[in-house]
Image (cartoon, rainbow, N blue to C red):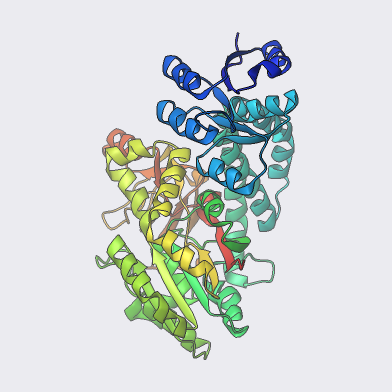
Length: 517
């Protein structure tokens, strides 16, 4: 079986017999030609896995030949082989999207390395990645079982996301094994939250993680106090794995300090984002600023008062920070922000909320076409990346990289792909969210959920004296017995939030500064 079909173009091809024999012994088929016209004819006749192209030839040059080969076989990698070390030749070759650049005299192992990089890279990466994960599997399983603190869970989650990204990029068949390990981790994380969450909220002790209401107090205000102007970007429903993909796009523009924090419950925009902007837990908001809080059973929008809530927090800390607030729901709002960008520098703090990812997750639930486009986790990340590349956020980051802003990017919560239905019964006033329920006389299997029977203990509003909050854990979601099968088939494998999982609760908090060159 051939390892690949190569075309070698060189006006001194007869001097390369030793190299060609070496490659043939390694299992490659090598077609040789000594001039550009023959090379172009060969490319018209058959498809090559890789072309080795001499840069200096009589008649058509290597660069001119490269252009014609690319027109015939645009996907075939071309490796430029040259005696020249002139920078402008290298620049032209790289600009023409060559796969590699070799300086004569080349040795056979150099050629073999470039073949492995360009022909066999995927297979090699897949094999090495799978082997590495298999070797780390047991160690990671032990770390999951040994988690005792939130920092432990952060470390485990980071490792799981790292392996998820590596295995998905390698087209590995180990993904199912990793998913089982993630499920095991989420089961443990759910128990950890159920055991500790109320204690963290009630006691406000030193050992509790950084949570939503503390973001301004512990991250934003200290930066302003240092004399920095802060640009806060809150991307709704933004998971850590999505951040990791995005960070590869902007890593060359910024110096990045990466951290994770804990979203409050419910991991829903109404609660978590309002908690960030107000610096208060939901119950405190409803009591102190009743005109700025909207209960679950009210029909008006739940996040219409974010700008004023920021103002209340600044006032409460007796600060005098000048700030702006922008919400980006579409491209026109984004373009308006970019036009105003230069005027924003007069503020100590600029806050931008971006809703696209949350809109995408809801559209995926409701629209069959979007569900097909984002039919798994990897595709969901890919759409997120594609959106970023062509969105206002990409343009905004380029402007911020050239500025002196301290840039903080975070989110209010993440989401999880819900696959396991849980039956629950409630009255007509029970909320519609699939990952948490609040209401009177809720009926459910207690061992499958985390229930808060006294909402005040969790600093949550209670519309009625007998209101309870019930949270789904892991990848489960709530379904009513009426029309159960239809309900399950419609919502199964959709991305949801509101409950307890690493994906929803352990979320990015990133500090960045433009990299000065």
